[in-house]
Image (tube, rainbow, N blue to C red; front, side):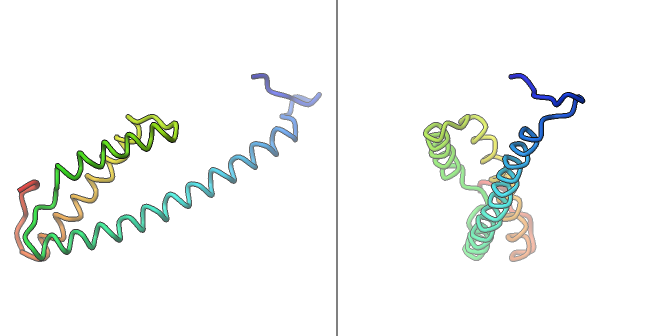
Length: 116
């Protein structure tokens, strides 16, 4: 792809305008992602409280495996790299488990063993 420059070497205003339009869209998508993650974490906090109240382990490896497989399928159908989607979910799940462990500590006063 060639870059269009004006006679004085500056980037063409039409290119700058297109970059600005695309970046505005990216900024809007980023904001939506942050808000969706916030909603997700509100739900997972409720799960953490329910697990702690019933002495359930913070981690659920079977659920995590199911979710990874599901997310990989969704990523493939959306033309997104499934490995990237899995890495993202693993990062989110690790944070959720950390929250669940903290909630369990607050409820029981002791540190739970993940997966027990």
